[in-house]
Structure formats: C-alpha cells, structure tokens
Image 1: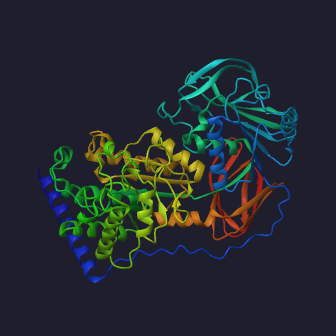
Image 2: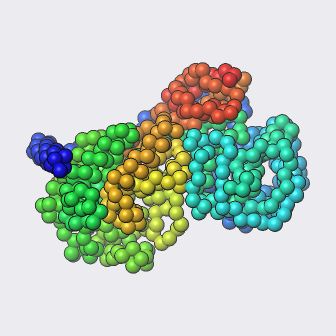
Image 3: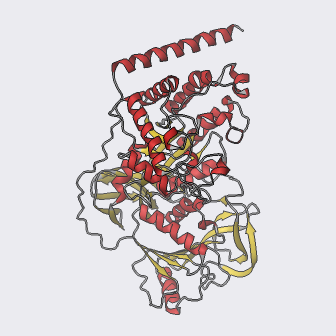
Length: 609
C-alpha cells in the first residue's frame, strides 16, 4: 500500500513538472520544423570500369507469376542501381551472355527459348558465370544443370527453413505458414548440391550446385513471386555472387499514428485494472513516459502523425475548428516529441480517410465518404491553420500517413494542394490490394511525381517471428526499418489482443532489441531525414568491378554520402579510399559490411581471409 502511495506522488510530480515545463515553453517561443531538402550540385567520378558487374533477367511471357518476379527484381535493382537487362525468354535473337556475371531466370514455360541461347547460358556458367533460377518448372532445359535427376507431381509447401546465414538474424526465424505457402515439385536430386533451405520435413527447397567454373541456384518454389521474399531474394543473389555493392538507406524509423491527438477521457477495463486510472491519465503518465524510455534505450527517433480532431465531419459547410482541451492536448505532446528530436507529420483533420464515394469501401471501415475534394481541402486547411496556431508559423509538414492507409487519387490531390511543402506519402509495403489502399513501392508516387513513396514495413506491439521476418526482408531489400504503432492499440481487441500494457511494451521493446543485436548499424532517423537520404541516392548511377584485391566503384550524379551493403567472398576489407566501412558479420567464406561512399570515386582494398 505504501509503495502505491509513493508511486502516486511520483507520477503526480512528473505530471506537474511536464505541465509547468510545456506551458513555460509555450509562453517563451514557437516551435520550428523546417527541413532543408536541397541537394548539392551533382559530381561524377572518372574511374574507368572496364568490366562492370551486370545481370541479365530472362522472363517468361504471359505468366503472372514470372511477371511478379521480374517486377520485384527490377524494383530492387533500380533502387540499388544494379546494372541489368531484361529480355523475354522467347526472344528470336541469339544473345551474347559474356557481359553478365549473373543470369536470372524468371520463367516457368521455356517453350520459346532458342537452342542457341540455351547453349550460350550453359557455356557462360561453365566459364564462371552464375545462374539463378527463381522458380520450379516441370519442363526446364536447365533442370539437369541444377542437379535434378527426376521430377514428379506438383506439391504444396507451407514451411521454409534457412540452412545458411544469408542475412543476420534471418536463419532461425519460424514465421507463420501464411508467408510460406508455395508450389513446388517432387524431385530426385544429385548428391552434390549445397542445400540453402528446406521444408520442415527436410526436403530441399533451394540449393546451389557447382557447374563448371560457375554456380547454379535453384528454387523449387514460387516464393519469389511475393514481396515478403523480395529482400531474401536479393540477399540470395548476393550469396551466389563473389562481390556485390548495393546502395541502401540504412535507416530506422518509429512512426506513431494518431500522435499527438485529442486524448479521450474514458474508462478502459484493461487500463483501469492495471493502473487504476482513466485513459487520459494513462497516456499522459504511463504510456508516453514508457515510449520515451524505449526510444532512448533502443536508439530510436519518433515521427508522430497528428490528428486534429476525432469527429465525423466530411461535409464542407459543417467542418469546425478544435476546442480548448484538444488544443492543449496537441500542444503538449507535440512539443515534447519535438524536444526529444522527433518530427510531426499529418494523419488528418479527422480519422476519416480522404476520398470520394466508391473510391474506398467506406462502409467496411465504418467511415463516411467525403462530400467533395473541396470538403477535404476545407478540413485539411483547418488542420493546417490549427498546426500553425499550436506550434507557430515556422512549422512545416513534410510527411503524410493516411487513416487506415487508405488514400485514392482524390485524397492525394487534396493533400498536395493544401500542404504544399509535403514530400512523402507513407503507406504500407505488404498487403493485398483493395480500393483506395496505399500499397506502395519505394520511389515516387505514381500519381504525383513530386511526392516520394516510402512505405512502412511492419507494425504493432507484438513480437512475432513474422514481424521480424518482415523487418529483415525489408532491410535486405532496401536497407531500412519503418515500423508504426497506434497509442490506442492497447484498447483495440485485434491490435491489443487483450494484453496488458506491461506485456505489450515488453514485446515491443524486444522487436528493436532483437534487430539492434543482430543488425546494429541502422541510423536512427526521423521521416524527413530518411526522405532526404532517399533523394541523395535516387538518381545516382554507378558501376563497380573487382580486380585482384581491389573493388573499384565509380559514381555519377553523386550528391552526398550514402551507405551500401557490400558482400565479398574469401576476402575482408582493410581500407576504403573515398569512404568508410563498418563490419556487420561473417558467414562461412562471406564478409558483410556497410560501406559509406564519401565521394564519387571509391576504392575498397581487400586481403584474403
């Protein structure tokens, strides 16, 4: 009883200090949120790269699965500035394969393959090139090269176990079977294969086989058709190659949707039972203090996405401004977030997704469609004015997260025409398409080219192997972690699952401690910092090649330093000219680094392991 009394006094003191501090700050100055997105004048290196690393994608015509794999490869190759060509497997031209270190087959039906091209691929591998076969095929002329002796019927596979440490922390994960649903073939294999992954029954799913002076990778699955394996596919490509240099963002971001927002004063059964207080007291005295502690311990910067008011107003003439209590709630939390190095983006005037009737399934979400684009702009203008009233006129909004991640074209138009400094839409990367869903690729928004698309890769307070897989897969593909949560997850049956805050915060912190332990090199950033870093690498062009104990990298349109994943077989870095490096890990004969390019010409000096 005495300890509870003391705890109560401490919490009251903390609350009083915060109130006093924030009110004094409001009296003294307005906040400033101005970020400079201007890029330096581009410069280009003059290193002569005689035989740059280059890949060839051969894709199947008329196959949705093959097209999905091709599209995924092109997305990550374009992001990481990989030199590559994409050509149909059915081309009627005899191809020259000598310039490619890696040939990738995104093909299921080989009926259009010229004999000359089959023999050319075979010869290239025999002479030291590598072949990466992305999916099983019942009638592939390359099956024998991959060590397949006999093929049986099609089978369904629902498990996946990595046997090689292709990326830190990935090997021991056991995500849900929904990730690993796939189609394979029953096969009899030669004994000289090196197994990369198996089913739970120890049946090989992926393997590598030496062929002449080169190697053949084979995937007896359709797993590479989905985004959930895109980063894994990229890391497997690095695993089969002798050297890879892939630019990345190397960033970690924690996003909090609906923060700051008006705090409802209601009784919640879980909160009342655990802390004996209403929601307002809990979020002020417990939740936010714990979040700041986790951010400090796990080296996180937070970007909050502000909600101005929780109302159901979507008709232009009925939209109103906020009351005094809402004003105070938004002011206090926003100022505290800024005081610890955070950033504020926009979530909305209210929590009704911006869009018109029939653009979104509003009924399914319990939302009301907006009357018109002008009504959306009226609500957004109120939001813009309130943000200026609360934080000052030098407070720009650069990032937007849509309520429920729903943002059709009409909503985008309303946003970009109202918040003219906006730089990025942050939707989601994984998911099934539905009307209005902001399901994104990394890059530029397809409808508004002056806006970046930088999707979130994971969410929630629960620690699961599936969440960790999503994170590592994204880091493997693009080099960044972007995780989002909602303050009211604890009160939501699905997002909170009836767990106490003590349970949820422990699982949540475990997500980041796990990533920090296995992959400690990510930079803590706010959203605008990551957006800027993407603009730095967006238009660079690079070539690289390995000669003896050196790797030479020449960069065109260099506009500032950036990080890259660098993997090398049977060597280690001793020095980087024109840059810097950090060791990540070593697996078998492969060394894994972050290399930072600090100029347009980089030379990596190696020595034998």
